[in-house]
Image: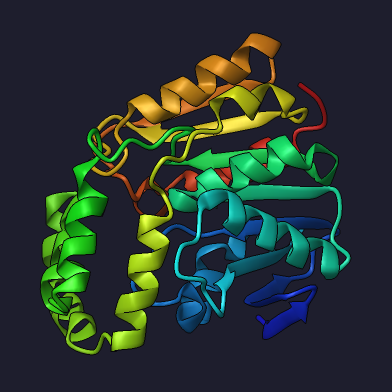
Length: 270
């Protein structure tokens, strides 16, 4: 499979993205918070979504290159919107996971004309640090430059215990190679979740929405998925599927995740 990695630079935004697939429809993926850029794992990402590439041309967007000292979810969303529009993409099938789901909710609410269908996984429409201590702990570890501990804690909250344990050697290796620049970037992106609340704007979402979550989500909790569904289902625009025993990263651990995305995105009508 051909994988194209490039950088969008215009309108004050510089942002890396990757492109793969040959389908007629345009799918945009916004990944979650990560310690190292997902773009560095372009081959693995493309392979994960291989089953969708006949139907979709897939774009995955990183966060902007030159982060300001503070960078809110709303600002991340606007920068991503600028990049998507700047590449001439329209009528997109948008999927956001975790922090990427927060960003996707903002885009769909503030630019509803852009999004044909929206799927969000393991995310929330409101983030309160007092209810979600994971990110605060990650920020502390990053500030103390404890890379191995950060990767280990990250994995322990994202994955079921058996999967986290199987990744131990990889986590130790990756954690030992985190640079100061990566630590600072991670801190800025993690702190950007503070005070996030898009609930009042969600009724502006016009497209059908699929909410995917996990009953055992140890990062944002299951309540976030149910709240998004509760708000959007009032207009009959949303459906929900909750996994059990798949962890926060059900988008990685659930075998049928891509099948659910494909079925929802290709559904002709509600």
